[in-house]
Image 1 (cartoon, rainbow, N blue to C red):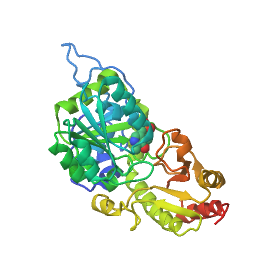
Image 2: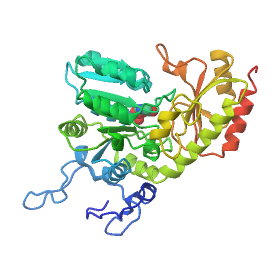
Image 3: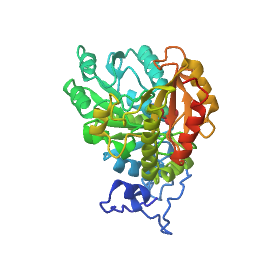
Image 4: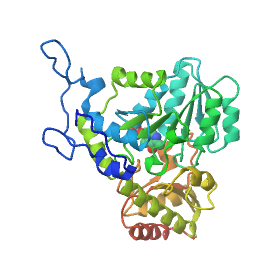
Length: 388
Ligand SMILES: *Cc1c(COP(=O)(O)O)cnc(C)c1O
């Protein structure tokens, strides 16, 4: 990408995304960033690195355009790409030392919940849990030994509890903690956690940011420079969990359509949630966009322009009923992951396995950008398999 700094005009986030900040790549003034494949950079006759890069593990220019765009969308100080959302999350955990206290929500992305527990046990980190969306429970978890890091995931996978980022960040800071928000599901289209007081935002860029089920990637964005941010940056360069240049390029391409994709998915998700809520074979719908969802008030405060493309619902007939519906869907592909252009369904409890907090009759939907009437017709024919 451009080595000459081009100051982008002040434009709205969707314009910045559509144009990937509007920068042109010299010397041909390409409107699409080239792919930087080099792993190393030459010195001049005085031994100077004129391009400012030493080695691609910690400083590949392949990351610059996607990091710059994400940083602008999150209104951050700096962003770093990682090899996956888990690698990005692990990088944030590196600010912890043995004996530090880490405060986590009871319900969080399943694989990260398991990893945090193993990591804490191995490294002598003290874990305290709070009930998602409950500030009272959070206050209890923060009290006692001072916390070093507060983890927030909102809306939280797969039951979509919304935690008030502004209030939770203020509480975390009052106790001396750094605050990180996993904003994978909200995306910068709906929520900007740094504007609400969080110190870091984590994304599984595998999901909405890339949006096409063809890249595994992660990112951390920081509100300001700090020793902790430097620790996170050093971890990427030194521990080496980096993204490949082609994946970084694909990620930027995906991010250019982030706004229309996420808005379409959110609009359709609300529509589908409303239809499912009226269906006789549906026991419960979890979607913060529904006015009678217990998380709606918190969602309305911090989510703009919709409440995201993820929802879950419980069906009659227990686990067997859920299995039957998942198996009968045709347009919805039964697969894990979320946030892409194609709609997915997952019978979540058996995927999470023993210890899952997820009801066994719950189906998770990731709504894509297909015609919403087609998606509703598919759900209705699958639900017709159940006794009402
Ligand atoms: C998928 C996911 C992750 C993990 O990201 P990977 O890119 O799969 O490593 C973390 N948080 C949430 C909310 C996710 O959905």
